Image (cartoon, rainbow, N blue to C red; front, side, top):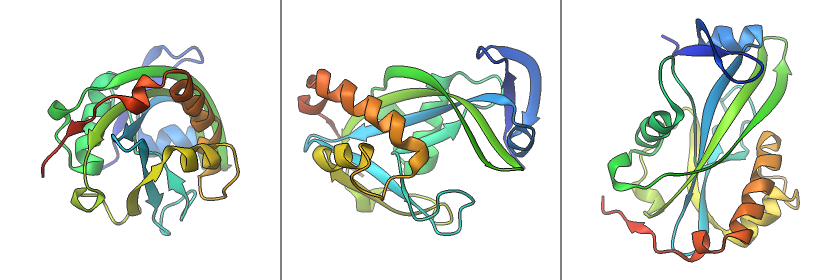
Length: 192
């Protein structure tokens, strides 16, 4: 069964209407999602390569964690749930820092109209990619990429990054470059 999601107004407030995720996209309703960037102490960003079988941007790299905020859920609870579901990491071991929100509209086809408010978070942790438990029907690999390569991907110097993430990744690069402590701070060491 599809997750139930709060329908939002054009200004990002809940309307009281709740719909299944597929219906939200089919009708082009406004809704909220979370995006999480996981950094490690080697100044690398964890990325997921989308499986070739997914409905949009197959084979491209996406960000560390994404997910739809469920009906009645706040984005901070959603990011904790999604990191456990998508990466198999206990969220209680991580500190999540909220960075920014933005709105994005992407019309992928006549039955997939994505009008999302994105709440963007960052966390730091030293984990081994091979210890990450991910859904192979959605993701073909996870890997850390050096920050400078991530910057090049965000700036369009590489065709690996799903185009839908380009502007957001550019904003993240700007933020991390301006706030170098995120890149140089100690990461949480997670043992599996």
